[in-house]
Image 1 (spheres, chains in turn purple, cyan):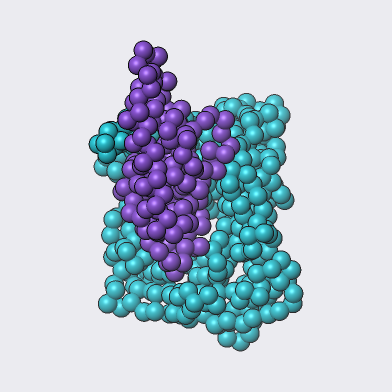
Image 2: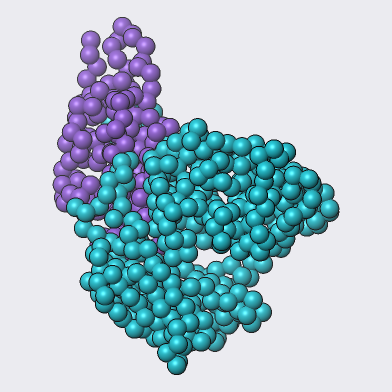
Length: 159
Length: 401
């Protein structure tokens, strides 16, 4: 069993914006995300014969695209999550967005990816597990730990 | 708190509302879109090449190939894959390192590069937008005088791309149904390409009945018409492929399955045929399909790889009773077409270099050789390989040797 071109196209047309959002979060660059996601889908099309039907096709495509995006990230100079200009300094310390950005940087890569795939792609645990090549149970534990760290960053306002 | 986290994540990476560019994905993956017809209208040269003197007056630009910008690596990879796919019909592969951008032509509001790469033993391949093709040079006997490709628009062609192998053609015009003509942008590329190129998007107001593009006309340097290529009429949607791969208009009540087998990996392969109007017999198999008719006779069998299994497909002449596959290691396998069709999975023992298919010999019932097609066995990307054997092209792209 291999993935059909039509199935991959359907996924692309339906979920491109979610793929782009995850890629932008990983790369920290909305324009680079477009290139990386399109390359990821091109790789999926090219390698569709290597999908054997183990798990949902969406999980396989997500895995291919996320791996391509991560490869892009390794080749890029810009750092993670430089999506926005740093918030203007204020007497109250960094803003909420800046605190979240710093908190995300403090997470492990796996935690960040689980957060991105959960929040920006709204993937279920099974698909996230397939995308990252980890156990389904690990997804929940990783997400809980990441959430706790991120929530903490949003409540602890430095003085 | 969850709401605050959701809001902060939303603000960090705002949602996209991106236009879908599936054709570009396919282009990057070197797969031709299947839902919109892409026409390949190349035909063999019928006239002898006319040598142009150095003092001739040329109504076009000449691009020095070696001064042109080298193509980026992904494009060179595309050329390699294109070479792999066309190994049966084009012959030699490409010198990927020499792929270059020779011009830019507009389509859909963007300037799209025209990339050209010379082939190892003469000829060239080129890519523009979603179209790619290969040609031979004028001094090669089978050079194409004017090779045209295009894509359907709302009525008639939306865009066309062409290569000109005939050195006599110095200028091109596009003729519309109402008789009006416009000059097409045209450039020639110097040796080792030695060919002319054009690419043109037909204006939207020219994609209407009675106003659509109907012909491409080539002129020599004295303004004499030396070539006229009539463009096909607007596509009849009934001939577009249905979900099963056969044209919608095909008579499925008379559908027959000529091949149905599983390869060594257990993957099922089928080839079905069904009659269609105009005396056509249409076929569909796992990787595509087409139609044959008295006007469009069988094209030679081709080797199709790029996946886990390499197959030989699809049509043979009616007179062919046996097909002999000859391998580099001397092994020979005889297979039988069914009613003018063949679908065969090459055994994996013949995937390694030195054991691959190198020729296809077709014979009639009396054993007389009808056709012999030489197969280039070392084109990359055709045969599967172990991950450790993959060639690395950069950009995360690999290809089997």
